[in-house]
Length: 350
Ligand code: PMV
Image (cartoon, rainbow, N blue to C red):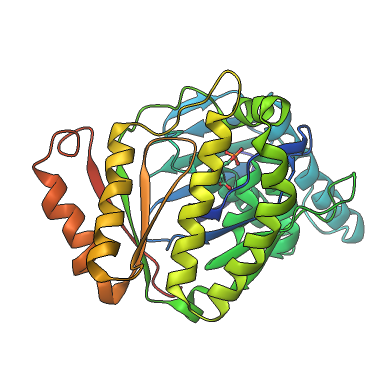
């Protein structure tokens, strides 16, 4: 019986507060702007992945996601496999005792504990876990910055899931993408009372994928250019300062304005892309009401490429934010049962 080599890991979902939207190089997943996110705690939304390799496996690499066989022939997955194998080959070249794993077929088995492709950043956690699981299997140095460069090629936002806490993704300028990597803005422990509630408006697969949506936006939206060249660079700085100073009012305001700006460029795309729906807009109104009642910003909404709302707040405002959503929305049409489940995100210090 040939030996099976195996390693497992988990990677959490990250939710951007400054959104990545637009590619300057679609093949390498190089963005037109930097972005910034908060990584959820491992106890919440996450992908668990086991990577293994063996000479006893069928010759083709395989990937099983939530029990379903996935197509691994796509350029994204292939790029991750290729880069990781190249790094393993370097290990094998340096150490003649290292088992020859790079040429063995890979089997990757992933499980998400949340709806896949519903604008809940499933590809981010998925590629981050895939890259780290194979890196562990190959016993590669686990430098998250270096792994982020590889995960980025699977799904752009995946590069940010290799760090916990508050994470930036520097767009970089090199044509080969060598400087387009994630960096830590602050660890989760720096601002550990940050919380989020996620309102799952729809668990259905989104109808415009982020890749095709981004490309149409870049090609047709006139709002897009000023967002990428002026608005986002300014907000990246404001957001990093807000996080350093634990200034929730600025964090919340910039988060909401950036979500609005991203969805405005989607609407300005031709043909237009609608990710938000009536329930999403009701959530926005609800957050406004909560903030008006409090007399300051204590809750901040943000939406990715789907209708689900992520609402950030500080633990001390739990009752006024998550509590209000739960009680008010539980008996409202569109928020109960299948269409409206609330999942609480908890950003406990890792
Ligand atoms: O990484 P992708 O290709 O799934 O794109 C993600 C885009 C957004 O989720 C909308 C924004 C972001 O920065 O995560």
